Image (tube, rainbow, N blue to C red; front, side, top):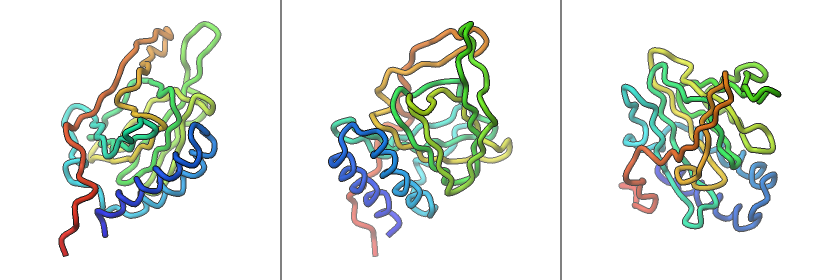
Length: 196
């Protein structure tokens, strides 16, 4: 049953995007309980998608919709690892699976600089956070722990590994375009039968 959790999530998300194409608020509202259910049990993530790298956080593609309407990614944070300040340009949901991560939102000032906006948010297993251009899309994320890995599951309203996004230099507001790609070369086989 563990391997079926991911397949069930993908099937439910596909039905959701079929029913509400392009409707960000309905998609986020419908996807939140699906993601919460997926991360409520930590027995389904393939080991290859859960391994930390000693230097870099890993962004493993778990599933990419063939029409690029959504993608599901495991983020594996090694001890002390963090992102630069960045955006997404599409809606996204973050579900904490294992360990803990902290996210700090940023806001642009009149002079172009970016400054922290509000308190840092800490996610624990089962918690969900959201980002989007309409809600607030610029943040920095880090592993809350300096001595162990953490894993979060991210759902995006597009193929996040192919989307042109931005990294920001907070002090100056300088913008650097990037396309993240993925750390893995192969995605898990969702349709393999589980052994009895």
